[in-house]
Amino acid sequence: MRRFALIAVPYTWLLALFLVPFLIVFKISLSDIDLAIPPYTPTMKDGFAALIQGLDFENFVFLTTDDLYYKAYLSSLKIALISTFLTLLVGYPMAYSMSRAPEEWRATLMMLVILPFWTSFLIRVYAWIGILSNEGLLNQLLLWSGMISDPLTILNTNTAVYIGIVYTYLPFMILPIYAALDRMDDSLIEAAEDLGCSRLSAFWLVTVPLSKNGIIAGCFLVFIPALGEFVIPSLLGGSGTLMIGKVLFEEFFNNRDWPVASAVAVILLLILIVPIVLFQRNQQKQAEAEA
Amino acid sequence: MKRLSTFNTTALTLGFAFLYLPMILLVIYSFNASKLVTVWAGFSTKWYGELLRDEAFLDAAWVTIKVAVMSSTLATVLGTMAAYVLVNSGRFLGRTLFSGMIYAPLVMPEVITGLSLLLLFIGIGLDRGVLTIVLAHTTFAMCYVSVVVSSRLVSFDRSLEEAALDLGCTRLEAFRLVTLPIIAPAVISGWLLAFTLSLDDLVIASFVSGPSSTTLPIKIWSAVRLGVSPEINALSTMMIGVVTIGVISASLVSKRNSVRAQKDAQAAERAA
Image 1 (spheres, each protein chain N blue to C red):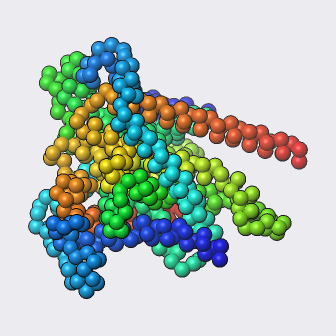
Image 2 (cartoon, chains in turn red, brown; image 1 turned 30 degrees about the vertical axis):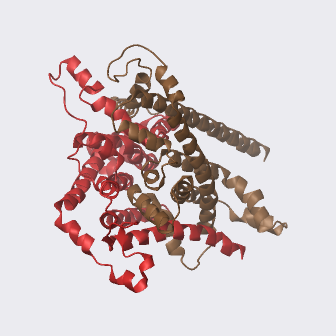
């Protein structure tokens, strides 16, 4: 009996506040927009038969006819891919160097990587506005040093979005790679070098393959949230920065088109299922390899 | 002992400069007398004074803290229960669905979580306010808590609990007197994580909050959309300060505990 209650409480909570809301989104994505409150038909009040009959895939068809949407999906994918790659480029050398650091430094270095994660996400993104704007600190520095003669436009472009994503998601990339490198046996490198590898080829042939799982995990941990990102493109991106999270938010709040916003959400989720399943599989494989 | 190569030192220096410079600049410029954020006009703390006199900010801060305390506490209870079920309950009907619902919110884009919860609250006619934010935050935070707690429960030796049951404890007593003290560090970090997530959340709160329940991130959001503001710099500095002190003292405490545990283990070894 008590076991039943123990299972039932969190189970019911998640059913009611996670699964049911999602089913509602799915249902509304098949409904039509209306000027009533709530702004869509049919609703539960119309009876079950009318509810079923009123549903169709019109909104999804609409998403394919207006090229704003597929452009937004494609550009979200592009921005997420590029920024994941950039995060890897910045994160790998850091994780690698941390794993080379003396034992007694590592806890401190680890804390320094995690600390920004506890600070407000919004504030970390906001910090870049003052740096990247036309009169910002970066432009002041470059102008002062004479490297440029006119200020660079970085804020409100995709470059600023890349910088923002790399900056805020860097800890997610560093931690799994560091964990993989930390477990690595140093004598493997020594063996490779004894057998005639140069340092660089030992790195490519031994270190990188052994940290493969960490790299994959880190890339997914950056790519998945970056794809649906809303705050970074809204604050740092320009009007030309199309990202699906931003489109959904605007469709809902500015255009008040709930059915289309719901359809956008359903498609975003369908796109995310692939990387999520791949990520899960990678984690499982790793867990099995360790067991 | 290992020594860092030039490459390693450079990578770490540049990397940490990238991570910390933006926040350090924010802190420095919060003491700038000029309203123009890019021009330094001397040291001043006036923005802090202005921030602390701003009723709207104080109200938002109060709402945020209330929501964070309630939702993280609720999330810790539910998340610990969920972790216990996942690790100890073996097979039951709908187990796959259950673990799926625990892991899915971790990767769900915030815009979708926010949208779906708002549509639910409107569907059942629940007025948007503090309650709806608490419900929303509890739901996603409990998943994080249950991941943290279950990673600790996996390594927990169940025979300790069985021993307590054999010695006459009820199940609840065994949990309270044996299991809970052992998993307490994970429960506490779960609570802290839930608390931070709630303090930090903008997107979900924008969907489910009402006009009378503006949280601090929503307030900050509407201010920074208009550009850099010195008051927000002051607020950011205060938040960064609190987090830094919190994280450093937490890591000092855990370091002291692990040193003590090591000493105990050594003492036990010598005694044996």
